[in-house]
Image 1 (cartoon, rainbow, N blue to C red):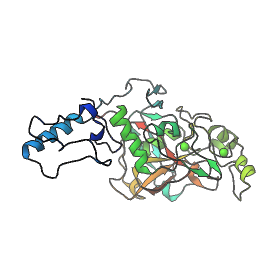
Image 2: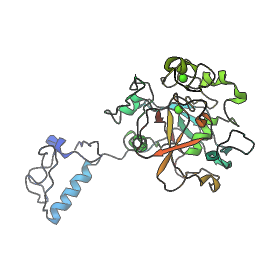
Image 3: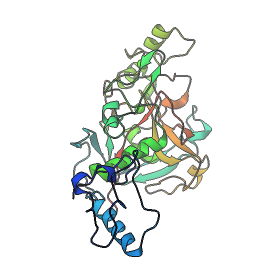
Image 4: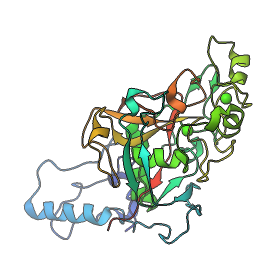
Amino acid sequence: MECHVSPSGFPNLSEMGTDAPPERHPFGAKKGRLSPSRGGKDVIPRRISPLAGLALAWSLAACQPPTPRLWHPPETAPPGSEWVEPRTGLVFVRIPAGCFMMGAEDWDNNRQWEETPAHPVCLSPFWLGRFEVTNRQFALWHPDHDSGRFLGLDLNGPELPVVNITWQEAEGFARWMRESVGVNAALPTEAQWEYAARGGLSPQWPPNDDWEEACRHENLQDESYLRRYKARIYPVPCADGYPSVAPVGSFLPNRFGLNDMLGNASEWVADWRDPYYYRHSPVHDPRGPERGTRKIVRGGDWHKSDAEPTTRFSFPIDGPLGARDPVRGFRVALPPPAP
Ligand SMILES: [Ca+2]
Ligand SMILES: [Ca+2]
């Protein structure tokens, strides 16, 4: 029996067509008790015998989509390897295992309290999306999503980063990849994101205040933004050539081969926000607080300036679960397979 699954994830009985249950079920359900939809709603009998209930449960179980086998690119791939997921076209980069000081250290005169205390973190190897998820890729799961308009711009270009999404929608895309694409995807943890953004660099970015180099690597609120919008801002002191959002991958990658980590769209990550978590974070593969009310967002974007610390590797901001922002998107990771 070929089954169809609705966007809710439940079997759509109205689309079962000729494969719908027979008029008289072998276990006694009568004709019409499990029928094609009326007015768009599946018809479920109000009273049902125990045997018929078993039959219904059997039918629904038979109609569940097969659980795909979660698969994963090889764990033996060397750091820097790329793997393209064929259905979505998402490109993943192999990030090596390693340890680093997460957060801002005391000698950093530009540190913010949100970045402290610096603490050691060691991570297992993982794969991370090379680019922010695009509108084209997000539409494979959510074809009706509208990234909207901002400052007179249409943000729905297929190769632009998807934005105006809630944290639940970002997580929903990763869940769709697990359940329907069959790839063990997840939002990166905050620690994975910071480690990957640094690309082996420490301390802060850009090294030696080389903003010309910064503008070759990241789409920020730069001098071209100032020329276009004539806003009262303090742009980063360089011209990156994009006064607004850019197609993903328009700038040079970092040392891990990842693009747009500190610019273009800011990015939801998996962790809840707790301003005191860094004080007791585990060293190995931290996953953030167990609960909270706000989720962490990492990286700057094309609409934030040098006056804001979001272009620092270690600066977290956060947002409520259901918040949308025209400069906020996400990327996905492939965490290590469970032992
Ligand atoms: Ca820019
Ligand atoms: Ca970004």
